[in-house]
Every structure is written in C-alpha cells, then in structure tokens.
View: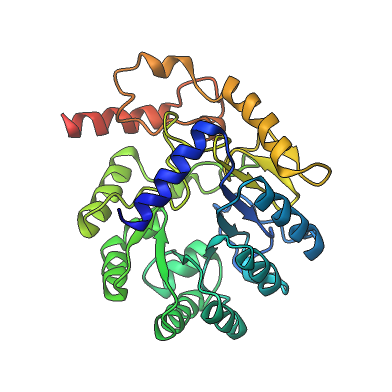
Length: 335
C-alpha cells in the first residue's frame, strides 16, 4: 500500500470512530499578497501568541492528531513559524505547509532540511508576471515563486504545486501544467471558487463557468494521470468528507469549524481542550451537514455539493444553482 493510500485509510477509519487525527491550523490572517478572492486575509488581525498555538498543538496531539496542515494567510509572515513547526514536528505529527511561495525566508529552508515536511504546497496563480499581478495585486510575485521553487528543488525538500479555478489562471492553464511537469511534481487544484467567508464576491467575474470548470479539472487530471482534485486533507463529498468526523479546522482566532470554507458551527478552543470541542461540534454538524434534497437527486454522483459550498453560495439548506449546473454538465459528459 502506498503512503498516501495508507494516510487516506487512517483518516477514513478514524472518521468511523470520531477520532480527530487531522487538523488544519490557520496560523495567521496576514499575507504579503492582496488576492481579491482570499477568504481570510485581514491585515489588521492580531495573531494568537506562540504560547497559545503551542497549547493548541499539545491539546490536539493528546486528542489524536497525526496529520497537520499549517496555513494562513501566509504562514511565513509569522516570525515564530519555525518554533511552532518544530514543536509540532517533534511531537511526531506529519506536517503539510500551505504557502503562496513568494515569501519563504532562507532560515525556513534550513528548518525544513533538518525536519522535512510531508510536503510544502505552493499555490500557483498563473504562469506570467502579468497574470500574477492581476490575481495577487503585487508586482514581482511570480519571480519570487520561481525562486522559492528553485530553492526547494535544490535542497530536495518535498513540495507540490496547487492552482485555482480562476479565469486568468484558466487562460494560462497549459503553461501552468507544463511548469508543474518541468518541476516533476503533481499539480493539485481546488475544484471550487465562491464568495469569501465574509460573503464578499467582488471576484465573481473571475469565477469559471460550469463548462470551463469541467474543462479545467479534466485537463489537469489528463495531464497527471490521477485525480488531483483529491485534497491533501480530506474528500469533499458528504458521504466521504472527514470534516468534524476525523478532521477539523482552527482559524486564526482559535475557532474550530468543519473546514476552511465553513464558518459554522464554530466553537473556541481557547477555553477548552480540543477533544470536547471537536465532539460537541461533531454532534452539531451531523444534524446540519446533509441536505435532504441530495439523497434522491439523480445528479448526486456527479455533484460537488457539500455543506460548506452550499453555505458560501448563500443557503446550506438548498441546492446551489451554480453547483447544480456543474453537476448537470458533468453528468452529461460521463453519460
């Protein structure tokens, strides 16, 4: 059995026992980029202290944590990232780090050489300086990404690339695919782009049409020969999603939620241990996660409906038109 298969099996088995083995930790809301579609960035936000995050990590390990995703914002905006990373690593947790790859300090490379991550996942926002500036709002970001990838490659630090279904990226998708192949790494991708957690959708014009989204995912799958949509954490279908079954998300304010996209149910972990918070939210989530209309729908096998996506689309208790249109087209393609 390959490692990623074993990892997935452990997460699935843990979900049956409601054991929280997978945690995603949003260490900061700060970022060096200004992407319109970002669902978290708050440059005025105050980070939790080093000591607070260490307490959270200790509690998470006591509850069963085996796999962690460290994300932001941009995680490397924290001066204490190395301290937090090393603490988690030395407790035996396998760590994936999400970064935009444009702000990787040299001392972090040394940290990763001594304590290799499971993977550093860099988000790719295009294949040119022009597209990067359009998407991220910053000049020179693409060149900084290339530099970071070069450093990781030279030092043989495991990394993967990830991209998003945005129109500017879609227009350069062939080049993004070629770049990932040149790096000899898989290209993962987010299969959904919607409003932010705050309900902002100023980037709506950059969202792909259902037709474009199917083409986007198919081209990446065909290029890499596997289902790159599968998350580094958990599946997103209601029947297989690990959210609040064996996985959870803790945001930069210390609130536990089902995942990065879902803002509720939520409960703080600052005044209680991870396990009782997880257990209470798991019970609440099981009552609201499913939408009854999905059970009898002919499109359910082709649909990417989930609680978080329905919530972002405006109503967690209703079928989202955008998601249904995508499922309808996908179903036709399969048939």
